[in-house]
Image (cartoon, rainbow, N blue to C red):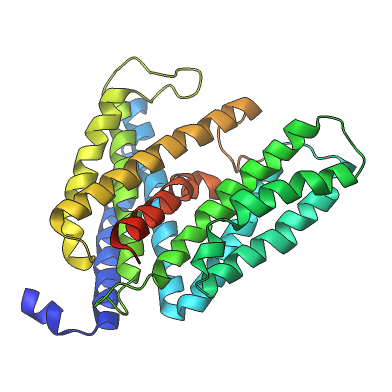
Amino acid sequence: MNQFLRSLTPTQQVAALFLFVFGVLALISVTTLLLSLREKRHPVHGERWQEELEHGRSLMRTTWFMVVVFWIGWALGEKVATVLFALLSFFALREFITLSPTRRGDHRSLLLAFFVVLPFQFWLVATAKFDLFTVFIPVYVFLAIPVASALADDPSHFLERNAKLQWGIMVCVYGLSHVPALLLLDFPGYKGKNAFLVFFLVGVVQTCMVVQHLLSRRMERKPFAPNVSRSFNWSTWAIGMVPAVILGGLFSFITPFKVGQSMAMALIACVAGSMGHLVMKALKRDRGIPNWGQRGVGVTGANGLLDRIDALCFAAPIFFHSVRWYFGV
């Protein structure tokens, strides 16, 4: 089997990987659907079991969404993948901004964010201008946004309004733009296989998040930050890292990493993703909503998009820069 896979071209290897993932997800989804239909016809379990089943279906929808998005991006090429992630970034930022009311003095800053900063950031990704891509938002944009706001002559809640927009740009644009940037890293002897890096990142982060979620519902532990998350505690957080790191080691053959390096990169990505997810929960609690896409709370855009990609928005830049720094690419 290993010899057969090695005989395939890089494109065929990536296609085979997606076929395998689609097959596994389809099997799990069909099993979950059959269990749900059986429970509706002949209820034999309690309310808690039904809630667990519904949570499982929700996790599967999120996983399907992420896999399909990455498959479309890979199938249509690097440039189209960059455009696709730019669109995701646009809707994620729209969803983030709509959490808080804006004033007339914010209009210039919002136009700058959506129609100048966002497309220019992804253009830098598409043209592989990594030196400027990494500092454009944290340096230039973070200075330009308050200037645009000050020129609007509206000092009311100035710091709060600008911090909100800057943070939204950092998470939804800067963070997410690092995912297609992985496709453009130039590893010696790894040409045409960069889609594996994206799969590796998403695979380990999603595994970590799913395991931590399931453990938190099974293991009764005192939450570490109960006002932010009733399910977050250090025990389930640490245990959830283990299968993700092991998976990272098993996936080392599809990456330019050795086994130890692969496990270390998986650990870095999972720590960043899980902590980012906690941060986004704190933002939701601050705004009094359980989900980014909950209807009737004023959140528009792609319904619940940030709930699906929040961990990735934090994990992607940490993973990208760790890889680039360590391997000097």
